[in-house]
Length: 302
Image (cartoon, rainbow, N blue to C red; front, side, top):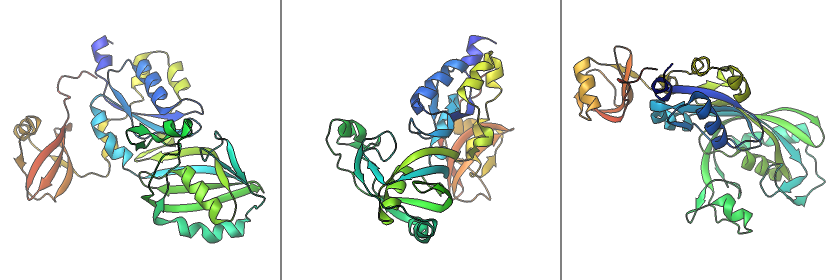
């Protein structure tokens, strides 16, 4: 395969991230393996977290927002009795408690954390405060001035409590939810302290563990062509968006940034295709479709 074909690769690759590297580091490694020109991930995982890290290549990067805004699922463990600066095992201990909640105590309060709730982000987060990352301020000993945010938690269940000092959970949540903050707040509600000791994302938007491959296994495939075969199509990120099929003339108009008239189409976002080929993400208002993101796939060979 030519260099040009490799550079033009478009689609989604779901990586099963291991403990250690940052999400940006994983993107860089996979981008190099595929010799791709453009890549971006669909939602950060902390270095200590594992699991589903969707990576978009080429024109698929225009659909990243739909994955980042989609539902997430995590499995995580809380270690009881110690508060840490980072709200996970990487931080320094700041407080201790001898209280250890029972399964009955835990199950009795889980419902309080389901629904639309307020959550204070961890001090060690990537949120910007006065133009600086919160974690950068925290590392310098400056407590970032963060505000509580509204997040959505759809489901929170206790999986098991294998020992007195820890418990395992599963959560379904929306964009912007910090599992570390959830663990911290749940522990405080139970009259103790707690922090995340293990965290695995099992779903991000439409992508699940079943789609995922580790960086090591991807590298062991040896040839770039074999690696590219693991790519999912651009439209994999748009499962929840209605598809609108149009003819070639209207497709050309959208690609030029012009509006088109559509019949019998509800207002809202649509994924526009022609002859099965992605054309654009558009917004329909009163039978007028206006392009928002146009896909430039006509000259790609991948």
